[in-house]
Amino acid sequence: MMSNGPILELRNVGKSFGSNRVLAGINLAVNAGEIVTLIGPSGSGKTTALRCMNFLEAYDEGEILIKGQLLGYSGTGRELKHRDGAGLIAEVRRPLAMVFQQFNLWPHLTVLENVCAPLVLGKKMSRDDARKKATAALAQVGMLEKAQARPARLSGGQQQRVGIARALALEPELLLLDEPTSALDPERVEEVLDVIKALANNGMTMVMVTHEMSFAAKISSRVVFMADGSVIESGAPATLFRQPQTERLKSFLAPWFKRPLQLDDAEATHA
Ligand SMILES: Nc1ncnc2c1ncn2[C@@H]1O[C@H](COP(=O)(O)OP(=O)(O)OP(=O)(O)O)[C@@H](O)[C@H]1O
Ligand SMILES: [Mg+2]
Image (cartoon, rainbow, N blue to C red):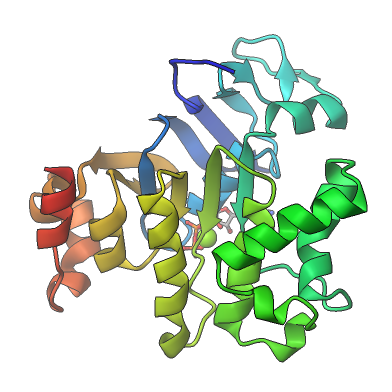
């Protein structure tokens, strides 16, 4: 399908849990090939924003468009009343796949079965076709050798690589990643970041929540800083990290500036 517009667009998206307005009017457009990272303090709404993009969480203000199609609701306007059926929602969000912080693998299934399951159950693919796709995806993240293992036998880094393979097998046009390395032991972080870096180099479009500031600086086309459910600043990583405009971003970044932050690569890539 040809489309010149953004793959994903959020227009004034809001979300409340009871009286707590967790997202307060988010605007964001993600074009093919872009890598957008969301940063911000705990509780600022990053995960909620990511879950709304995939309609794992129903937003209740504004609009989310995936390749120009309204996600989750029929009709537009301030009042989003008519929730679409699950089938239509699944169809609209098909270009997206999600990688979870806690991997969310099924413990009773093998690695291969974990990657096949969404293809067979969700995409109604034959077992043979699913197995082929899953095998290719596992090879892509270097996990084919463990295809017959159960998740409990794998390290956290390996489990997350399987989580990434499961998303890749769906052949998404845009990958959502929620802190993909924050549940890992420090020595396992790099192997997962390397897989994400390889996807980036292959042109995968991504929206990623991360606390890995050096990595965000290196990989992002755009960094979005959120606080209290709003986008406070966004821009190219070299600009955003070097010249924060708001006190909020300055104080958020302060702890990282005490450590060496490697921005040279970011400038080389995205200058
Ligand atoms: N299912 C829920 N029910 C009620 N409140 C929720 C729910 N999910 C999130 N919240 C609240 O929404 C706010 C934003 O949470 P969210 O998880 O999006 O933050 P975050 O930026 O991802 O934080 P962190 O960096 O800690 O992961 C928090 O105040 C949280 O308590
Ligand atoms: Mg979160």
